[in-house]
Length: 329
Image 1: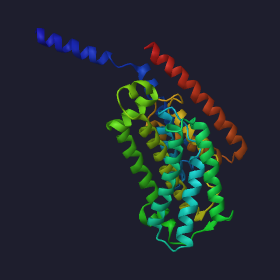
Image 2: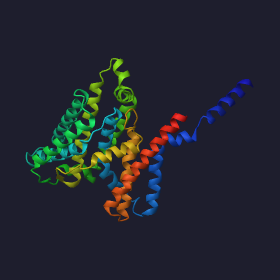
Image 3: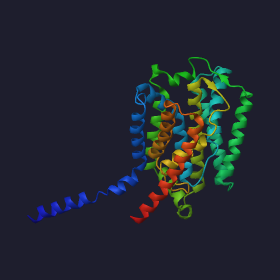
Image 4: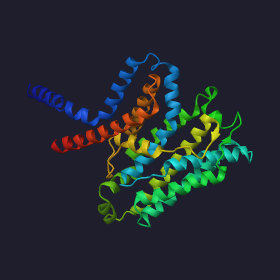
């Protein structure tokens, strides 16, 4: 009888442990996304059609990868303003290799991603070893990368032939860019949660001094986050080129702001040490749904920017409230 009562008491205690308020705090990004989906489906009959949903994922495959790359940089306490320009490098380099040199699109993609890696390492070295502020270092890289893209194309978009990069968005191959983006999101979510690299990136953003005193070479880890952002940004640029069948030096303009916004909406702290891959993806989708539903309702583009700005402010305000609530708990 005593054991039975003890078991019942433990069961009651377990049920009492569920904190609804804490649940809302921990999952606010997902809840916002769900509410937005419901509202959008009520506002437009075409929102939940398979074509519209597919178009959203095709459009966001690239920006989601950029946001994930930005997240790891932000978690170290840094910022990367060059991601949009590196997207342009990825788009132009791959397009030129395919069009002018007759290279198969797969090795062309690898070369373009390697160039993105170089730009990422360049930014990371300036920040970690040159003691540059992330804002200044990546601002310089942003200008250089954009300039390289314009020089490579001579300011003229490169038109891709049918049957090259457009295979990445082909229905016949089950829309590879969606599959690739989903696979990379899963991989990086697992890396963040289960690997030493993922945990140390967060630790560096939380308390870099303590990590250094533990004998860990933080500079290598900081550089690696910028390298990841560079590779993912170049791949995102390739995705844009695949969708438009054009490699343009104007690809990715302003994308750094959307990536930062996605991270912030996903609960990442710009001071570092806090962020989640899955929530960042949800943040990117929130921005995408806002733009999508406004397009379906024929809202002009300029008011869309105003609304996005207000949403970013609201997201930061929500983050502040969340931090206060967590401290209170």
